[in-house]
Image (cartoon, rainbow over all chains, first blue to last red; front, top):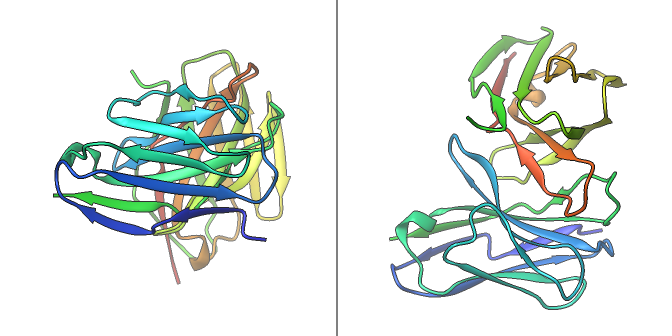
Length: 113
Length: 112
């Protein structure tokens, strides 16, 4: 049982390059989330998808786009990477019932030079 | 002011000590309260999940919620070196969207 799988685990980009972070879950969850984690800031929500076919902005969406490809997969795209987007990115999912907590992947460590 | 405040630590204790981790919050609409444990270079892992006020115990871990004071706690009894990690509190309203607000995390070191 893999849970939430994120790829790649590490990536270094140059300013202005683009990249897509992949996330897949095998728990048949309805809702999926993308967070970034920075020192002293906690986890901040970038985008979420409450169900297949829907996406919504979170707290820090600028510079990012998302695609809910199907029920299992939710990708995060950086169109033109900036040093301020250097962070650890986490994907999470939840079954969709409001009384259930989120399950997280192990993250993608992204450095932008 | 952040919606959720959590002392970043680090907190260093000897093996066997009782550890108390705390968070305060400002949004009285929060109804679901969670504690996650995060090891270095890993994702957050759910430890405790409670609804509304009260206590919940699971093995060596006890979660307390005091909604009147807007204060939540996680107690770890008989702490072990394997408990060394960052502990994140998190909370959510009882509304759609399922958006969760996280504290910044407290780093805990348990020394053998």
